[in-house]
Length: 614
Ligand SMILES: O=C([O-])CC(=O)C(=O)O
Ligand SMILES: [Mg+2]
Image 1 (spheres, rainbow, N blue to C red):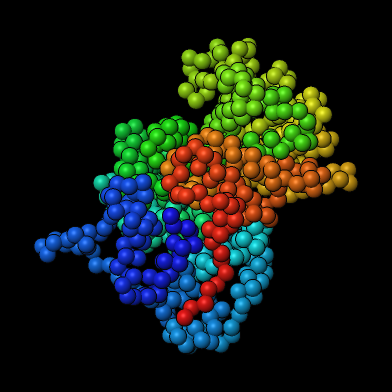
Image 2 (cartoon, helix red, strand yellow):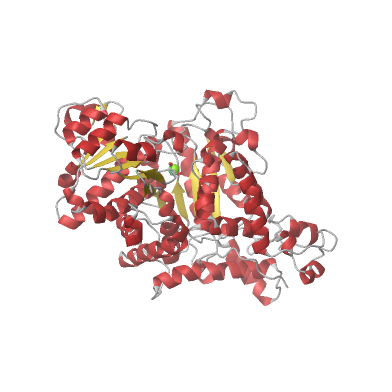
């Protein structure tokens, strides 16, 4: 088994050209995707990967091969390598040893001082998008400093590198484009996807986040410009979950876009054609998924992100049988919301089974959450799923989902078609169903009107209202509205962040029910255990682990999620519980199981502190 830190250490050894007998086997190990040679000696072992990827070892004299070198970055090149660059923090000794004399001004700053300067600079930008651009530039310039800044100022910078600002960045991605980030796989790469994967400079990939850009947050089809999302999500994998940056690969699959505005935009970065669908789409994705497994093995985690409903459900059900895949919008959102519901019982009283849930929005998030709630209630009460599903009602654009609509419903909505007369409007559904919990997942803003929220308040002492659609512009209502319209009684959380609100001299702190609480720790847990498949029980384990992190002090402020400030500790706990479940289910390949999983998770986590160079 190979821990994350050992993996990094090995890479560093190679980069620093510690030549000798070790070199050959180390290179082989790295090119095999971080799996030890022993792991992959049997060509199609669990560790997967293709042995001797470049064919150097077995090539005969008349075969062509790939020249592959590892060299020490120094001087000008070192300053332009974000992985190793430390800018003004290079010491005198390092400046001598690495040919940096004269390439830097004389001052030597500590990483802390560099960070202080950056915080000051960032705060001077009034336009959020300018902060985003500054952060991306930093990531491309000095990775360690980028992550240190993000980790130390997570509450302040999450809204910059993630929702809501990342949404605006994707909308304007073509205009603000500077350095390419991530890997672009378009229809033009059909038949060559394995080669494209090999163009990526890192070999030891552990997590891929992939989008096709068709449903970016609640902003719709942004085509190739959706790249901001995998890049942002993976920054959080590193900052919040401690997965090393070199192990993360953002990918955008460009099959065209149906967004007319982008098709007519001279700065659009993608292929200018309508979206490929049907067989053409399925074949490209099949080639991609096959190439991923071939290149990185069975243990690489593929996170699907912001696909449109129809593809999201289909890809998840198709590839969950053969690959380690996870859909963040269906499963990550479900897990984070379930965590909030479990923790809210401390404030609301009763069990989950005592509550009635009404959703506005029956897509990936809505039906994903609904299913996980029903599963959790079923596990807790031993009632069959068909029964526990009846606690959950969904409203889509055509009204309440009921039996009489079943013939025209998409398959993922069918389990939620219960016996009831048709109802068109949300507010009438609230009056008829009398939910204790109202959840917005439609991607459409301002749909929790005053009347809807007031009706919830008339039915419940403490109405639980979750406005989950992203970014902030698509939120079903604001925190301020939720508190004002319920006279301060609501327990409120949203997908994108809202500031605390003062209501009648009391400070009310809204929660952020965002999958960012879950996916970094969840992914770390899978990687630690060497999981080969995702199982719903792992999602339940993650929810319970997150709910257990909410303290009395948090509850006293009306919070049902812990603050993001402690997220690395939270992620380590989630990772440990997820990994434990992976071992319990017999889906782990990293054996033997480490005894202390929280400690082990922490020991695997990437640190952004500068290292000294010899
Ligand atoms: O990115 C986020 O903030 C949450 C998410 O997955 C989405 O809204 O699609
Ligand atoms: Mg998403």
